[in-house]
Image (cartoon, rainbow, N blue to C red; front, side):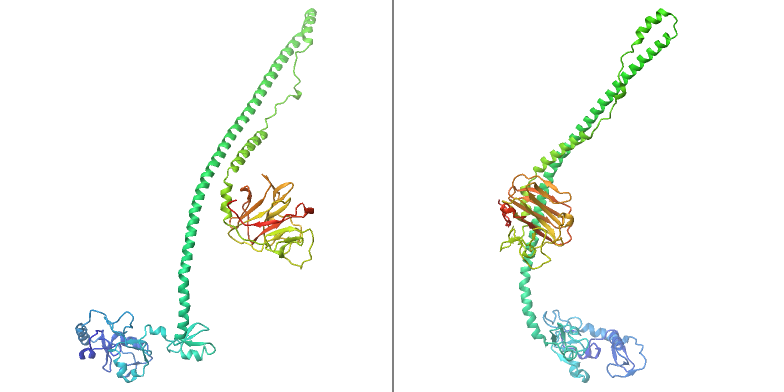
Amino acid sequence: MACANTSWSEENFSCSICLDVFSSPVTTACGHNFCRTCITKFWDEQVQYKCPVCNEIFHTRPDLRVNTFLSELAAQIRTTVRVKEQPCVEPAEVPCDVCTGTQQKAVKSCLVCFTSYCQTHLEPHQRVARLRKHRLVEPMDRLEDRMCQKHDRLLELFCQTEQVCVCQFCKVEDHKSHPVVPLKEEYEVKTVQLGQIEAEVPQKIQERKQKIKEIKDTVELSNKDADRAIAHGGQVFTALIGCVEKGRDEFNQTVQEKLKFTVKRAKDLIQELEQEIEDLTNRSSEVKRLSHTEDHLHFLQTFRSLKDPPPTRDWTKVEVRPPSYVGTLRRSLDQLEETLNMEMKKLPDDAELKRVQQYEVDVTLDPDTAHPTLILSEDGKQVHDGDVWKILPDNPKRFTYYTFVLTRQSFSSGRFYFEVQVKDKTAWWLGVARESIDREGETECTPETGYWTLWYDKDGLVFNDNPDVRLPLRAELQKVGVFVDYDEGLVSFYDVEARVHIYSATGCTFTEPLYPILNPYLHEEGRNSAPLIISPVNQTD
């Protein structure tokens, strides 16, 4: 509809259902005209087929055909409507649902028709008796969404229990025991909450941007570490490959020389044997000839030379043994191992230690797990053996055989690192253990039973495994660092003061929480009375 006042001729060519100029007009048997789409939709929603204007009932649905004459006149009326160039509805206003083309501003919304009307199209609701009974309210957008689907009433209230909008009938039926307030009251509450959310959002955005930066920085650092590792690894493997190739060539040469010596000796022995065979064959021929002579003088003179046989070797103990290459191969492997150890010593342990120290965690000892002879400091950072069994309440978490103690904190993912001072101790035991370890029996403490630990005493340093892995002790240990990568299945130990790697258990499988575990070992009449101390990390050491 246009913004201009509707002319008399336009009103006479308007559908009484949509209130707009006819589109494909049809005429009912009672003589009233409607848009074909409007009357069809009207009858689709009715039980009886009746005229919307005079309410005449049709026993069968009429077969309607377009009134071509009226259609042509309606088309002419439609082309004469002057439409303003600018819309009549501001952005914040509700448009009329009936207007076609340029929409007018709605002045009222009908809660019965679920339609908003401009002043022009509201006229039937002010004139027609049955339409005057409809409930008109201030213009509302999306009227269907504002109505209760069950009671067909305006949603004016809010149920605080179920957090839904309800109508007056809902309040006394389905929500009669719930706190129900007007929409405006709940709106004010939710507005305050929205303000809080709105204030939190920028902070969360900033936190996530910071996390993105951290991740990108980590990726950049990882790329640099990877480049350095590849470069250094290339040097190490090149040296190892060279050593392997050299060892292979030397091994092959040694084997060939041993084989050559054996073949030459065998050839010399065969030649000597063949010569003796030839000499013995000649002697046999001479003996045979002499045995047939009848000349007594010749026989006696010749027999003297045949009496003593030519010198021959005793071959019963002579043999040619195949050469053994076991020792040769062992020497080559020992040389390769020596080269590998030299290259291992060149690894940048200091840089590696700095890298793992960034995963430091703050852990404290759990007195509920401590063996009854252990004494813990108040801050939970130190433990030593008191050499006296304390009477304590029964606790399934407590160790009663080994003098172990766990930390309060456990870890089920990611990476973590902690350091323990072992200075002035003659024996100690530390590492990590899984939650389900046996705390009462004499269990062999190996990875298979849930322990990944180092043990130190007068005999040296050992990683507890089956069999144990004995480790070189470069100097007296002062502080031990323990690093765990849960997801990668890695447990590593470091000499913090020397800043070198001690040992790594790789390919571990972790399926439950891991706890740092300490054992200061027995008091030994004061010789091992110093405590184990969980120390803060100092990367400048």
